[in-house]
Image (tube, rainbow, N blue to C red; front, top):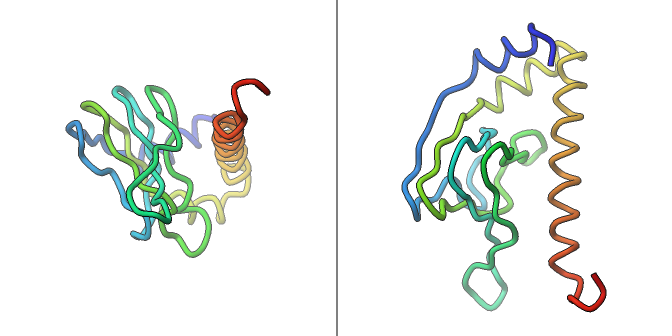
Length: 135
């Protein structure tokens, strides 16, 4: 990212830690943050129709978590739970979104990075759904 884009990120960044078992966010809650995982592991979980939660993917250091702040209705579609102690950098999604709309170069750069994350998640989910014999 360009230095001026890095400055935008620094303006809205803070550090946050979570203990093992802590919920970072729940499905249906307002989505307004983007997380960069510095250390630890986070499970992305989905509510099952029969009850309970199913782990969709486990994320670790240097991975981004959360893009629901970018698209209406701005609510989380999954739950994120710390599997072990987790340290994150949290970015204010509202600030990022407003800046992206004002500065289209920043917005384009941000959208490319978010799109890469979305593609990675979709590919990981697809691999989980394919029986082992077909992989």
